[in-house]
Image 1 (cartoon, rainbow, N blue to C red):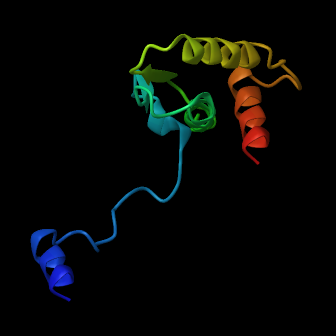
Image 2 (cartoon, rainbow, N blue to C red; image 1 turned 60 degrees about the vertical axis):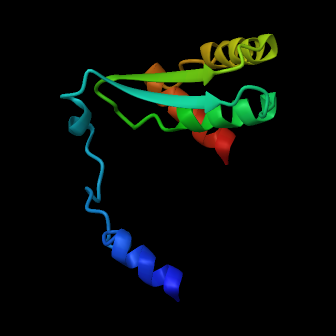
Length: 118
């Protein structure tokens, strides 16, 4: 009980709902130059599976009909060769996504990532 009281006293807004837009409108991204998503991989603690999972999650965050550039940056702090190889293989998979149905590459990529994550 003491911890709960201290938490409420020291962080009064912790249980307040966060005010945010309840819908997404592609025009919201029109005024942005870019959206940058950064994923950090710990020096030697995380393996290739964790890194690729995080990278898939970052790329999956591509908003539909985004009007600005969407950049994914993987900050691999250990500078390990196997992580660089994993990143290059992942980029090769993304480059091989075909342009189907007259949709943009970004829309095809977003649908591909949605299916991959499901």
